Length: 564
Image (cartoon, rainbow, N blue to C red; front, side):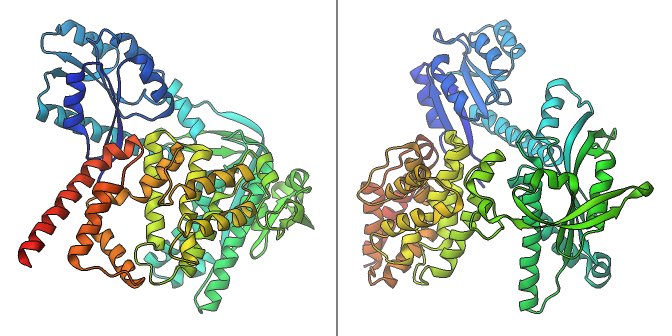
């Protein structure tokens, strides 16, 4: 399995550059070459880099000062820095390079096997570091990790307006007695995975699960506005997801679970606890009140306290349910949350927030995940069965390739969302017709995306990206280039022949059958004379593979001619 990484080379020696390009290109290595620090810094501002090679003998690069500056750049401070020098360079100078952050050196002229081996070692270490970082991010909030990395500890803090969300499945203990352990865990995991997805989209922080109970926070570890509104939106979506699963289970005569949800807002103390198995947690009466709200909720309902209602009543329909007894004889006024008010709802149905409400909560204005679910379901249900190649599998593979290329190119945030949206809609035109399908895909995007909170400028960008995939078009922007390269990423992959076979079958389904020789000539003509990769990333990681496919096809052609 290929692992993709940006490798930055800062060197103005043409012999070194040519040698490194020949040795290291391919195998997931995206090499970016710069002659000096001035040209390297803009790249480091945009792209996450895993390995940096620096020629410390270059007159255009003050290697030692650059190594110092790389320590503070967020896109390079975790990269492995390797210095390049000739074999006569003094050992003392190399030691100075190591003190400034370099981890190894390579001597020129290069030993091919040694250089490749060192790059593979540090590439492996980089991905191990990345995996460890991802695991830590799954365990601790990002703000906690930032404190741990910068000062080595996290001091407990008090939050005056923290929101606590609790969920709990009804009659879970009874299910645990009936279901087999593996089935029980799989069922619970499927629910919690969806809860995790919802919590993340509303910028809440999952704290823990305790058996079948799920706990999350808002307004404690993040700085987004309106934590009570965001937490209530998440609770609504969790409730609606459980209800949808229940309706489906009833329809197919399977078992299902019901849920209770409770929320409260108030003062909390957040901190780390433990010396070995460390965990992040919160304490305070607000946690207990939220738990009581959940315990006193009813089947598939959301119970919130009056403190929460003070923050959300302008946006949600709530029903007063009376006072609930708490511990130590105190009481709290409780309410049921029914749904969003229509004028704050995306489709005027009280389920999803409008664009304006999302913006007020510092959330992305468009609901990409809901748009994604819509178009994927549309493609699954409406694409003709004759589309062996342009199937939903193709769309999802192109999306995966687009994400990979975009990340290597430094595309993130809203630009990445726009790109992924265009990828998902780019083959929608095949629902209506086979040739010149892009126009219909664009019309569908223009009609549907506004419903998911996309503005006209964003829809125009999506339409332009889809239009760039027309045969007669040439992509101009980076997003358009990534779209076209992702659409043809497989041309340089090892699975090319398997994917190409589905295209041949599809063409035959649409009255365009080919003999074996015609099919080989068709492929050679397209790969050798028509297709080009546009982004430097795709040229780096796929061009060599595409040339290998061309040679394979030419060999197959020669063999076929001899046989006939």
